[in-house]
Each structure stands twice: as structure tokens, then as C-alpha cells.
Image 1 (tube, rainbow, N blue to C red):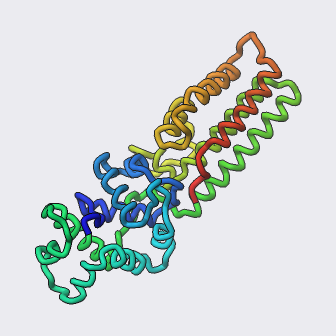
Image 2 (tube, rainbow, N blue to C red; image 1 turned 120 degrees about the horizontal axis):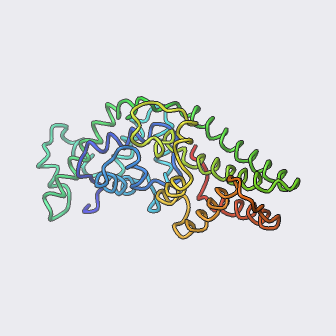
Image 3 (cartoon, rainbow, N blue to C red; image 1 turned 135 degrees about the horizontal axis):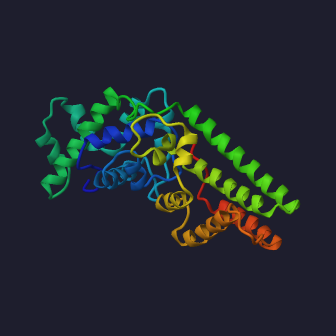
Length: 287
């Protein structure tokens, strides 16, 4: 039992379970995702490792059926209790034998030569037992909205992305080359924001002290910042950053009243490149 899941700070378990229960579910959970939701860097790494070992995440960070069951269940405490008993069967059996068993005795059940690790396992087990009774409490942010509202925003962004690209194609057809480039980039940006919808756009709301409309959040993020966020949170590969920033530069040029008009063939190529980087956005918007 030396590999039993445990955390350094058991209070992180409460925050993590609140996060699972609220909002939408990301396609991949990373330490950066937890940091965007208020965890310190150390706690984020520690908690991500725990959620993986506990069976809520796959090794690559994908939420498992256990995560989804806990998120969607009308009785999440029962789901958590079942997961706890499955993960710590010997500890659960020892508590069943004696509900008053002390932590020192439980630590002896953990087969490890490291007393500190044994006590961390016991503390984690005890905290999960408490949470399986009391639940994780309220959501961590008063600004968190019901999932249906977040999904409505995602739907709006996806529709906007489609409309903007259709405008880009129509502009190209009528030789309106500058507007074609601008609309094509707008299509990509809307799609990118849809991919940042996890936990009510928590990545964008970092540092916000209160509810902020999505439109205001989008206006506050400049193009280069958007690209940086996509790379930081692994929504696009780091090696694609230079290529995307070049497309952003071309968009910025097209938005300026410069004397030289874009070339029609180059503009068509630009639209094709936007389709390519759109397809490269990892997975899909969170639901």
C-alpha cells in the first residue's frame, strides 16, 4: 500500500472536489488548470497527482467516469465514499472494525517505512471520509454560474465562429480582402474562447474580484495574450505559437489603412491557414 494517494494539505481536497462539482468539465486537467482556479503552484501539482492516483483523472489528465459520476450524481457523497473505500480498502476495513480507531493505529496499516507518508495517507483518508459525509460545501467563487449558462456562452461562441468565417468567405468572393482576413481571424478567436470555457472561463477570470460578462473578458484579452493563454494551457502546441502569431500579425496589418492591398491568392491561403489552426485546437469546448 505504499502507493496510496495522499496530499500534503488535506484542505486542497475540499477545494478540488468543489471544482469537480461546479461548472463544466475540462477535457484535460493540468496543474495550470488548478492554478487558474486559485490553487498555489505546489498545491496544484500535488492535487493533480492525487486526482490521478484516486482515479478521477487518467495519467494524461483526462477526467474519468469517476470524475463525471461525482460531478453529475444527485448523491455525490455516496460516489465519493465508494471511491474512497475502493482506493483504501484496508483502512476502510479497519475503521469498520473499530469506528474509534486512532490515527497511529491506522498508520500501522499503511505498509511503508516512511512514517510521514503513512500519516499523510491517514490524514487524506480521514478527510475524504469527512467529505463523504458533509460534502465539499459551496462553490469556490460567488461568481460561478450554472453550467447551462456557460454552455449557452459556448454555443454563442461556436455560432459566432461559424458566422465570422462565412463572412470571410463572402468577402473573399467579392474581393474585399482586408475584411476577409479580419473576419477569418475573428472566427479563430471566437473558437479559441469557446475552448477556454472550463469552469465559467476561470482562466480568463483569474484575478477578477467579481462577476464579469464574457464580452468584457474577451475585450480585455489582446490577440497576443490569447495566443499565450492557448499555449500556456496546452490548447495548442508550443511549436505552433510562431505560426499563429504570424497569422495574428497579418490580421493586424489587414485592419490598418495601409496603401498596399493584400493579394487575393494570399488571402485565400490565409483563410485556409485559419481552418488548419482551428482544427489543431485540442479536443473541444468543455461541457
